[in-house]
Length: 126
Length: 143
Image 1: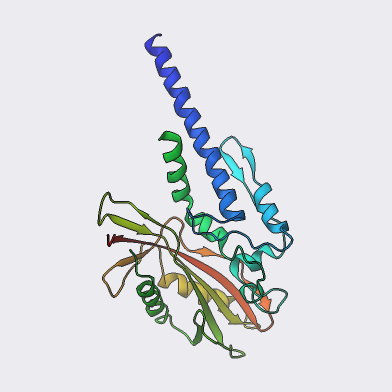
Image 2: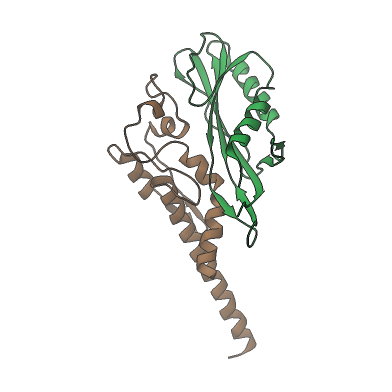
């Protein structure tokens, strides 16, 4: 093994870890948005038909090597995120029936991003 | 640990200095909006916490959020709603430190800074603008 080969092997190992941290962080975002997370404080999505939770759980995609995007096109997602009136009536939290999930998961997930990365990096690097 | 009662009190005290004529819909209190009069609706999320300092009495980081909805009477034009929201954002700029009654500094985070939702008519009579303030506090652990 030459010194040059050692350096190349080290670089490959570092890049592999970066990739693993990135991929696992996206999985934590998905969990935070869909089911809730202790890392972010997000409650996750309430469940009636599970359509919204399924959207958040499955819509994530890598659009470039280091870019991952997720979202939903459910029109009621906005009312749940911001706890707004649904169809001009009562606000979401006043009519929520689901025993799980709640509002503001997106804001909590964004704010908890560094917690996610710290947690995942700790697991990957040890 | 962050005392969330003190945190909410500090945030409310700051919010109540916002200029203009508006009513305050506090979380979990009965409130009926007055037609034609702006009001602000609040919700406080305690957020996650982590001990960052090592050992007993180590520093604990807490990341609460203050969710506000600014309701401006409809029909006044978008400028009234924007002016109201801009005044709120100016009151809680990133890096602002609010000193709580127990001397804890509760800071408005820079990343993410204040998050704005879409300004829309969600119910008859008002244009609503959601604003989320992400906050940050360091406190000694009590154990």
